[in-house]
Image 1 (spheres, helix red, strand yellow):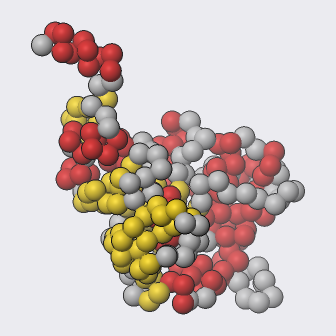
Image 2 (tube, rainbow, N blue to C red; image 1 turned 135 degrees about the vertical axis):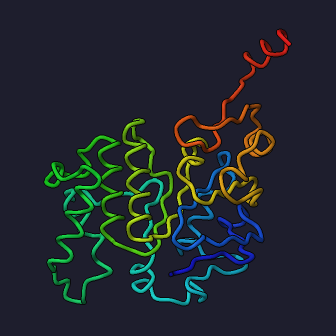
Length: 269
């Protein structure tokens, strides 16, 4: 299986360091979800792993080789990315957008094959975007647009898939559908997946491997049962909570207390 890891990586924007001396490896064939408070470095780490941000120190290794020493085309055949705020050219239809996911697999003359057609149709069917095929991307609602971008990432059919907040703009039904879809992809094809997610309960439910970050560093990683504790939630999110088994999945479920209910709890104890 393909491997992707960061080794003693420091990532910065201009002179502002966001991630410092961080080492992490994505378990091959598993779903890894990265959680943490806003501005903790989650998306920056994903950008570094995706070759969009060159490390100021350390290295990102794809199959044991420096990812920045490999060609863009070769990397794109192995690693797919859905960034947090993707932008499509004006006038591009959904079908055209999803079809762009096939570019790394095509020859220099961009010959469209039956394999490309099947990959695009499968991705659009899985994301419920077939009926949107002829619509311009810039005419879609936020949720429809997000599903179209996810379809493009799926059509790329890479062995490693990185998703930065893929449930943004989606209602709760489509959030679950997207995470179910990604899990199906992982289970069926063995795709290694890394997702940045804000919802800790959904992260605990869908992750095989969970990484919790704070201030550009990894605070804890392991299975959701190992990582999600009341102490961890307090440390990473600054939130008082109770952690109990999710009645559906059995994974840890975080129940926030909140200032008002914390006062009630103290007054009745």
